[in-house]
Length: 374
Image (cartoon, one colour):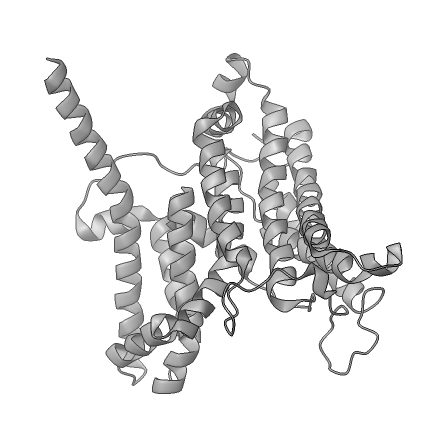
């Protein structure tokens, strides 16, 4: 009897696992096919286009490095949105949280040596710059978390509005108090950070840096927190049913605030890592779209950290390979945005995929929000 029950459990587990993977794969496949039709209708050859896309993303050591560079902020930001989803919260504010994280990281990166009056060792300067970005993202995300917990203010509206505040404040800072005094171009930016605040490259001659490794480690840590700790259980319980969580003795308000704060910390970390590991300054507009792409990445990854990493690599490969595709085939890189949008549509409305392929999907569904002010 126990052996029969065991086989049944494993069969159900396998079916649920396949079902949870099948929809994202079919969503990507369907989006690629429709994208190919768009390319064909515009006079291009979709096979050559996708071959160029693959070559640009994975065709050489440099291409792989650049794909990893693109994937780094996508992983951090995707984890930020996925963590909020697990708590039943829709964090659309990752864009603003990432921008503030970049601003704070850049400020500590270039100004701290002047404040203390001497050079700072890299072992101290890098953690301080990155930590400032994490703190900025945490505080900025905690505000809509507190509004949600204590007033019922919906996090979707609040995070959207706070994006406008963050992005416009960033523009003011980069065109005013934090502007590079030797600015020679029309682009607004901060002074370069000190070399002691640089996150080093992994390989000489390639731009991929140790922030990429940190992103992978962070994905593992998020998984451990969500599924192996009491706090993670509380986050998932509140996300599934806050009333039941409250009845079970979980402090729902505290959990909502912590979930948003941790989500903002990951988004702020994305911004700080981009400054300290790649750009070595904060330039206006460098991160436009990362926070919004993160929503699609979290959904495509089914809000699971491993899924987020894989989805981040897919989006990074498309972004990195798009330039090579355009060079070889003269097809505009905008087609990549079309494919990404189609992926998001098919993931968010997975009933379309189930209808097209006549499949029955079992398993957990993503809880995006629990209603206005609920």
